[in-house]
Structure formats: structure tokens, C-alpha cells
Image (cartoon, rainbow, N blue to C red; front, side, top):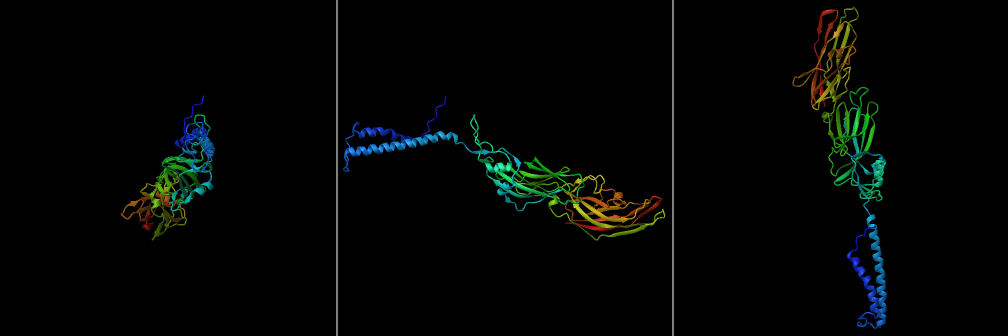
Length: 419
């Protein structure tokens, strides 16, 4: 059984219906069938019969108009339950965007984005937008999903009505953000094998694993759609780069660096100037009767870095990975040339002297630094904001066939200036 519909007519409608109900009475009065029909005499020269006819005609027309108005209201009342909201509040956190063209039309170029620097990844945020709503067409283009039903439809067996407007929720907005990543030209470049993983982090948690990048395969880009607070914190949605337990985040809200394992990356250049480098030259007689071993060496170059990939051969200093936040690695490259001798061993010493007199030793074994097939590289861990230091090399030689031979030479030095 169909329940009785509540009466929803307005006072104005009731007034109009009152006119409709009084129409027959007016007709009867005009015909003289009701008392008082002859009491009101016309004053404009018309006969009572003419007045009665005019009154009857006007009353009928008014009655017809009232019937039409009443029917229109009734029709509107019938349609009201079906005129439900065509809006829907989306229940999403963050998704990758499918249609770059539609997204591009909604975003604006972000000026002043910082650049996240990471092995194999140099990331910037290129465009952003904060939106109050999305149309159904925009939502489908951005997400590749069908629009959900409008709120309040599809309940109690009713047919769901597709939403035409998508909302982010109370005190929320939609964030659209585009990012791109290129090769960071990291020096020294991690050797084959390692890769940097890129995630989209929502509320600080890895939400979407985007991709991984490695040597020779670094070009990446993407767009994300997220629901954020109306005035979002920069940490709300980030792109996170990570390698060997070290992670950094760039905000997809405003392009700022919001977390880093290596603050020194963003407080100055990693350039190192080498000056006043001494040159060492010597000849040592070989007991085998071959030509003397000739040695010539100097400090060739140096660089700063916050990350050295774990290297079993200790080329760059062994299992160092990331420097602490208040430290940085100084990699000193020597130009050290000599002809090979199985009889003569080089046992030179390399130290890095800081302005306060502190002497640091390298991460590598000195034998590996100076051997004929060695890396000729010395790596030191120094304070992150060091401005200058002095490399001091003290050459020393021994002979396998002459246990009494032990020759130490005057040190040579070079000045390092960090910018």
C-alpha cells in the first residue's frame, strides 16, 4: 500500500485554492439563487444582468487559472523527491592522474620550486592547483574511473544517479600537482647495481610506489590528485626519493624541501678548489737490477658528497653510504704515477688537517691508496660546514729484499677551499 503523501501546499497556494472553492458560490449568487444577489445595484449604467454575466465569466476564468496553478504545484510536488543532490564527496587520499592534458588545463606553473637532489634523481615540482570541485568529466579524465553516484541516491532500492559535481569534503580541497625528475649527475656516480626509489607520500606515509631510477635510466615525470586541507601543510603530499636507508621529500603542495638526510646539499655548492698543491718526485733503486722505480705525485682534485655507494673494493671508502646530517665526505683524488716494482712497497701517509689542528685519516687503507693498481683516492669525513682544510702526504718506501731500507720523504701539501 502506498503511504499517503504529506500535504506540502504553501499558504499562498491555499489562498489561491480558496478562490477556486468560492467560484461556484459566485456563480450561484450571480444567478440570484443565493441571498443578497439583488442588493448591490450597478452604478456604471450596466444592468444587473450584465454585471452578473461579467462576474460569472471572470470567476470562471479565475477558477481555471487556479486549477492550472494548483496542478503545476502538484506536479512540482511529485517531482521533488526525484530532484536529489547531484553532488558526491570523494573518499580518496591520493591517486596518479591519467590525463595530462586535462590536468594541465587546471594547473598553473609553479614558480620558485626548490630542487631535490638525490643519487639518480633531481626532482622539481612544475605545476600545481587547489580546486574546490571537479566536474564528472574532469574526474573521469583525471582518474580513469567512473563517477560515483550522487550522495543520497541509490538507497532503499532507488536507482543511483551519477554525480555531476565531485567535492573534496568539508574544509578540504583537491590538490593537483605535476613533478619531473632528471639525472642528478651525482659525483661520484654510484656504480652499477643501485637504484633510487620514488614514492608519493601522503601524510608522511609511502602511499604510491611510482618508479625506480638508476644509472642511464633517470627521466621520470608524473601528476597526482589528492584531497588535502583547504590550507594544506607542505608535508601533506610529497614525492620521496630513497636509496640505502636515506630519504628526502619535496612538497607537492609548494615545491619546498620538507625533509632531507643531507642538509648540506641545500646550503651551498659542493665545489672544492685545490690550490698550492706541491709535487713529489723521486727515484728508488731496485735490488733486482732493473731500472729504478720513478715516482711522481700531487693532489689532482677534490669533491664533496653526502652519499657514497657501498663499494666492496673500497674505491671511495668502503661501506659509507650516507654521511650524518652534520657531516659530509671529502674525496681527494691524487695524481700518483710510478712504474711497478715487486720489491718496493709504498707506505705513504695521507692526512687532512683542519683549521683547529685536528688531523683526520682516510677511510681507505693507505696501501690501497698508493699501490700500483690502487685508486689513488683518499676519502675523509668532515664537518658539513667546513670552509678550508689542508691535505698532507708523507711518502714512505720499504724494500722486500732489504729489511733495513725504510725511506721517508718530506711531506707535500695542498689547500682545499669549500664553497
